[in-house]
Length: 278
Image (cartoon, rainbow, N blue to C red; front, top):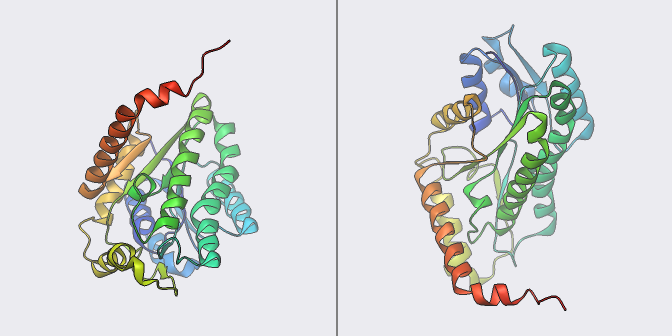
């Protein structure tokens, strides 16, 4: 059955490929970007089933206007994909507050505000699916991207809570956690801290160099990622978390092992912390 998809950040990367896949599969799509001219080519072949809208997710008035235009055009919103986001490189001590706050405004607050703007539509329908593009960096922390990790950990936590709140209302939630994909994330979509502290050369600086160095050559295929997201949304029982990429799977399993080790090793202390009632 055809669904109405609302996708943020469609000028490049996952958002762009997903918009193309959704439309090719026969769905309807609200294709958004800060500059609608960047996505006109996507909607050109689907004039009856798509619309290109201007949207910067940090602008409340643009969020409200885009949701209203989507409702006016298609009467409903079945799938919200919160894809818009940026990166930022720097050790935690090196990171500049204004850059970090800007990233939180886009990666977390933009996503949260988009979600709360669309939820009334989905609640009225008693159906819907919120898809939040996070990262394996929302489950595993890495040097050089500590604050980026923090935005994605926040997305993961918000999404898990949201899923429990809206499940009785017929609304589903899925968090997408990719590893390295051939998008602009490690290229023009991520700034570097201007502060450099030599003590972080072997940790944050090395990892930053590695990530920058393989930008454009990551193993992940954005087109396959789009197909995977479409498959998850169309499934009867979609996952709360969908890892994408072998590195994501390896990192996720390593994290599970680390958690298990710490929980088991410190079990006695953990249980002891509960004092018996008098």
